Image 1 (cartoon, rainbow, N blue to C red):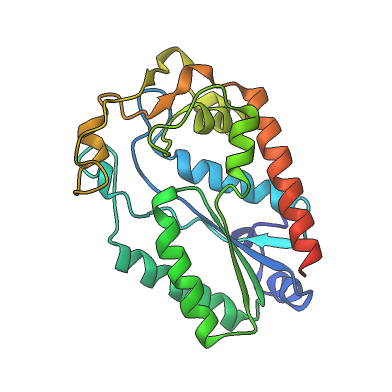
Image 2 (cartoon, helix red, strand yellow):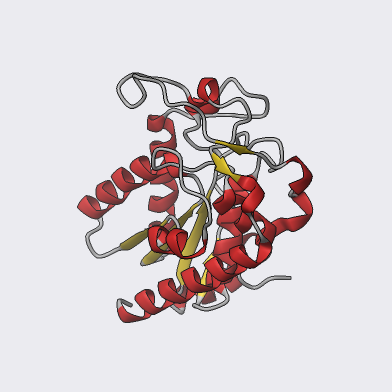
Length: 241
């Protein structure tokens, strides 16, 4: 039994945790393709892994993962399910409002999927307008740019990443048994002339579903990234509690 997991606690144990003014952590992922070497649940697994590591350092409970996001760019690839931005926002908003109704005053959304970020930001603002005294924070690999420069050997593709050295290294640290490194590839597709101007789908640009060089990933890199990331987040939370 894990005393940090809401789904394993009784109502009375939850009542005690809420009375202690603990953080409520909500992992948010997606169900989408991650190339030939990573599982479809990569974003979920990474959000949960970061949530677990964070809960080891702060007084927090972890709610069950909200594991469907905005995955339009991969919608035609096997295993990918997507929500509209509006549906994603509405469900997340209602989950946060429900947490607030339970008595939580500090909520941390641990997001593992880049395309969810804008919708989450809008939800934060909507909540802030109605509940100005409630702290709702979003984590999407804070300090990522510095950590990327420090540990990654390969560049991003047009500023983005997917199933690359970064995500593969993190998955090797989180769930190595699900990573098929013998199938990892390096792909930097040619950038279409209208990329960023039209509604081009990433699934039609990349042949493998990978953007970057997954072959350079290692568990050691992933573990170092997580260690520094969690340390920085805990320091920040402690200063602003």
